Length: 236
View 1 (cartoon, one colour):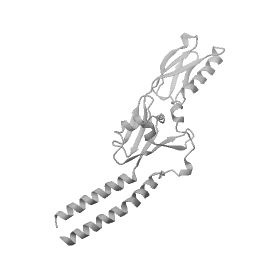
View 2 (cartoon, helix red, strand yellow):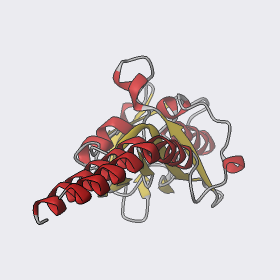
View 3 (cartoon, one colour):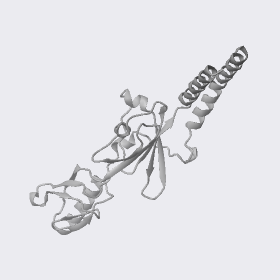
View 4 (cartoon, helix red, strand yellow):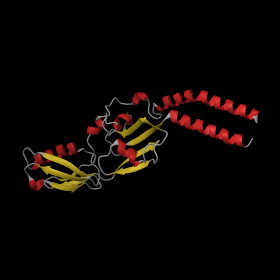
């Protein structure tokens, strides 16, 4: 029995000595995305996500107003192909455009056919058939439909919140650009929770990856090792 206790104490001491180095190494590894080189990350202000316009998609409901021309103002739903039909214009492709881009396009069309200086406004009343993916250290990873302007904190809440091993300072948002390339933006939830930073707005098809805390993972392994040693000692 004494001999076994000496072995157990030695194993615990070894784990304690190993823990800081292991945690530090894991944290350093977690700070850099495994799939995208650090040099590929664009120098983009994360706050730009908040003000960047949502892109219109199929089944969205749009409220279109033409100043001082009530007969041209109406509420229309985007069809499955991303198009919509309006009087004097006919069918027009709205899918993939922001509200401001659609306003400009409609104004150009009306100027060609009917009005001298049309002033068009577009308000998106309903956001349908959009989705984001949340993975990594969350309680319920998956693909989640969104039906309105959705923020990073809201998406993480949809995934059941952060897991016990999550690193809230290591949140990545992967986004496909229109030219087919991909950008990645990094966020820290702490200042967002405190109201020191705006909660960034997400785009449809965004992929959110929550990082793993190296320190918490190492501590979990350490406590499990201690438990195994205790259980092992009961049988000898």
